Every structure is written in structure tokens, then in C-alpha cells.
Image 1 (cartoon, rainbow, N blue to C red):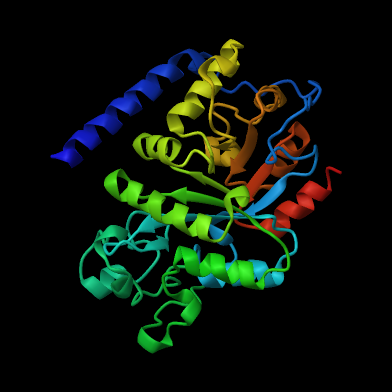
Image 2 (image 1 turned 60 degrees about the vertical axis):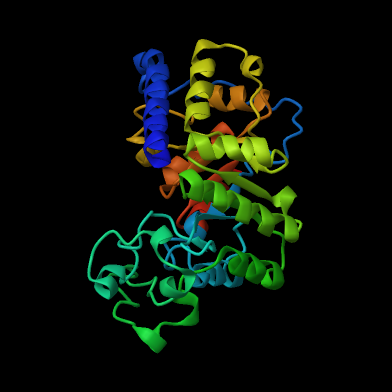
Length: 335
């Protein structure tokens, strides 16, 4: 019964967000004014970067280079890439309460789960960690025109292609890396599992004293509310409703401080990730508005060099990408 009420609540929240979008739909496709000066007021937010120097975040720990959200992907970034400042990944809680890395709610699209269990819709929350560890998380990763890890089973699955645990990958990075990475961590679990995931993630962050290097996020308004009420000391991004509210206030040129935003960053799409800028979220005007309210702006998932250059020149604070080296080169062209 509680699940039904939660579903109804999320649907209603969606209607609220859609209703707030109606006034701004009249301005779809607005490209902004490239001659608008970039303004950086005095900011206290450490996630607002210097102009032309955005953080480069490895999306799903470098999904274009290795199977996403696996220890292999983290190893590839830490050992082979000097240009990454931030590691972005997704977490969910397992049936037995462990926190693992995975983006989709099911294992179907990334692993051999449907073969192993003989059915579809193998949810992350439906397996224990021990059961999930049987999966090959590189099954559907496409490398240079082929699937280099497809077909590996049992003992043939490399240790770094099993399901990755959140504490395991963070401990690897902290013990191995020669610099301090920032972490962007999205909680994908929803409802009561989302709250369990937040509790578990907070323990991992606190035990390792990473509070100043983590921004966490969620698309679920109820999980976001739980983050705000229980762990306000952890920086977070705006949830979906807050992001719509931000854009509405920006478009109306209203004072955002009237609603006392408690998030430190927006994580929003741009370009090909935003239906080719049906609503352009990357203008200088919008970035100036965000920075004027001490809010950082981080963009996903940016793999196109021209989009990288535009966002860098407009003042983006972080670019989340599957291909960090390509983005680093494009950012360098702007300096």
C-alpha cells in the first residue's frame, strides 16, 4: 500500500513540474546572446570553477572507455588519465542492503542477467550482493567495433568486471590515486530503498571523511527531501522539481533567494543530451544567474567537442563526459 501512495505522489510531483514548465515553453530554443559578458561575482561555493577551467568528470566512471560503473572503469581513469578531476557514478541498494554501482534499475542491459536467470527485469534490488557478483558487467560493452568481454562466465570473469561496491571503488581510488578526486554520486534507488541507499552512502562518506569532496543527487523528490532533512551537511544537486523552479525563476528574472535554495549545483543536460537544445540550458545569461546565486552548473553527458567549447566559453563549472581526453583537448582550445 505504501508503494502505491509513493507512486501516486511521484506522479503528482511530475504534474507539478510539468505545469511549471508551461510558461518557459514559449522561449524554447533561445540560444542566448554570445556577446553577453561572463560575470563571476564573489562566490563561496567551491564547486564554482574559474572561467575557462571546468572540472572534467568521468561519466559512469568513463563509460566510453570501459564497462560503465565497474572497477575496471575506475582503474582505467586513475591509472591512465591525468585530466579527470571528478568521478561520477550511480548507486543502488541490493536486496541485502549493500550499496553497489549501477545506473539502470535492472541489470538486463549491461550484463548477462537475463541469460543467467531465464527472464527479463532483473532489478538491482531483487538480488543479494552475492547473487549479483555472478554477473559479467562487461557483457554488453562495445569497444572498438566489438564486444571484448562478451561470453565470459564464472571464473573467467575478471575481478574488475564483477558488480562493484561503493565502498570498494572509493577505497581503491583513495588508496591508489595520486590526487584527491571529487565524487558526483547519484542515488538511483527510489522509495524506501532510496532512503536506505542514502543512509548507507552517508556512512561510507562520513567514515572516509569525504564530506567536502562529494556531491550527491537523486531524481526522486522524496529521496531528495530525505537527503535534505537527514544529512544537510552533504552537498547535493537540485532535484528535478528544483531544477524546473530554478529555470522558471531565471526566465522570469525573479529573485531565487526568495525560495532559499539549499542545493549547491545544477546537473543538467545540454545539446544532444537535451533534444538538441529544445530548451537551451547552456547560455551565458543562465550561467551568470546561477553563479550570482552561488550555484555551480554541471552538464551531462557531453561528448561533442563543439558543445564542450560552447559550454566552456559560457562559463560551465563541470563537464560530465564518457570521453575525458576528448573533452580535455576541447577545453584546452578555449584557453
